[in-house]
Length: 365
Image 1 (cartoon, rainbow, N blue to C red):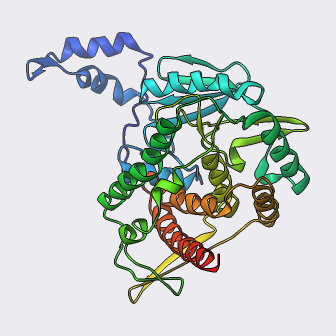
Image 2 (cartoon, rainbow, N blue to C red):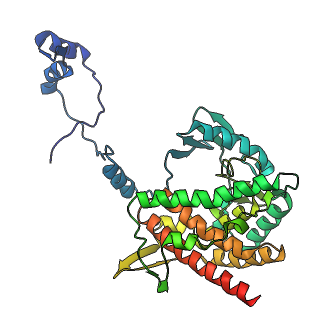
Image 3 (cartoon, one colour):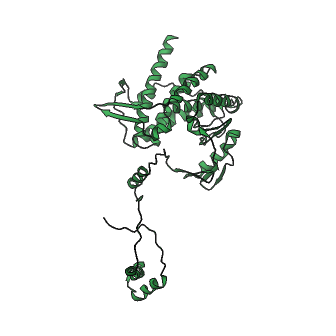
């Protein structure tokens, strides 16, 4: 047990403090030391004790977060603050701030009020209400109906070839880059051949089975980009969308409707609240991986209705499910262990299953 200086100091008896320098003018490295004055007043001073938590290293910072039970899913190079009726977001990349502000125009009536920027900060009014993940099926039906009528506006006048190229880059190239980023972290074992009892192959072998050209034949429309239940706030009949994506493969105006559908689909399976409360687990034993997680009952009912909506609109449900699987893989390197490991194995297994199912459906037709 020892006492440590926590960095909080003030000199009340400053006359005695300065007298200490008069009595001790010793120099160290040709500098007069703060301690010359401090040591003079210490014999007549009393220490005040504080409970101190050290955050000086990455390891100690994680311990402090655990101490305060702070389980926010953080993203690199960004921070979010909420207070005084405002949501304030800091981004290391200043260009992202401007893009988010530009994109807020396309959210129109669904955007939080008073969205503004300053330097590396993007801020707007805190939206009162409940997250979609806390709501009931009728609320979900209302959301989908409003999005379908008022938000997901299909764009017909655009260069289809360029749009296809953007989708291809966003889906294939971004996925490959994210997989490489994940492997650079040297956490994931891609040699594991069985996940939850199902045989799988290495991730690049699985990705090679995807018809990226067909997957990239998207539906150009207005988009959110991270359309998931915790980014959707409902207050009676008022819908507020938060944490939207800054662009879709470089475009601030038009994205692929299928990406919004897939974003929602993937988050109706794995919910942020479940992850924050660590209601999931991953085990590696004898060269085999197994994982499990809790699913919220209301989100299960949402997903069942959502899949019927996709079928009724004549959209491709298989494509939505494949994109959902890719989303798990894409976001894995953006999170810490063991969540990144869980996302990888879940994404890899689901991608395998969906590709097999798609292949069998084609055989039947």
